[in-house]
Image 1 (cartoon, rainbow, N blue to C red):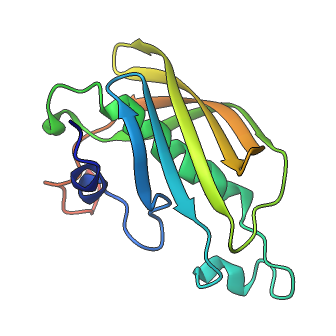
Image 2: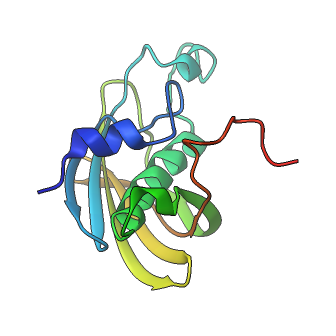
Image 3: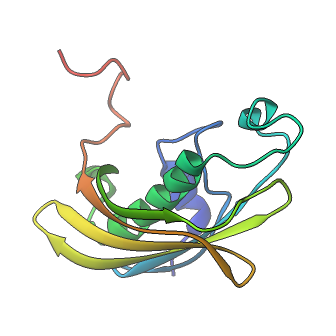
Length: 153
């Protein structure tokens, strides 16, 4: 059984860039389904847009990449093998606005794994409506836990 709370604790992202609130399902090495509760209290809504708040598309993409990363990471033998990072956006399309109060359900399916890369298809929905979809390439990155956060010299 997958301990989804433990997986979320091990993500390198923290507020305000953790775009996943809950993991609904993980099928090891194949798929992940995550939930993002879109709240008016998120800092980007202050200026995007004040009288008509809309979740920025780049943050929807980030939520989708994080979910795809969870699907890819679930195929790793050990946590020390690294954290998936977004390497390429092959396709991405926004289809509908996401606004405060929406629940974004993100489904990521690993299409191919080759060497330290994975191609992942990701769909984001609000209710039954697809609001965004894309195909991303993720790379198996260096572990972040031991890192000082200063980057390499």
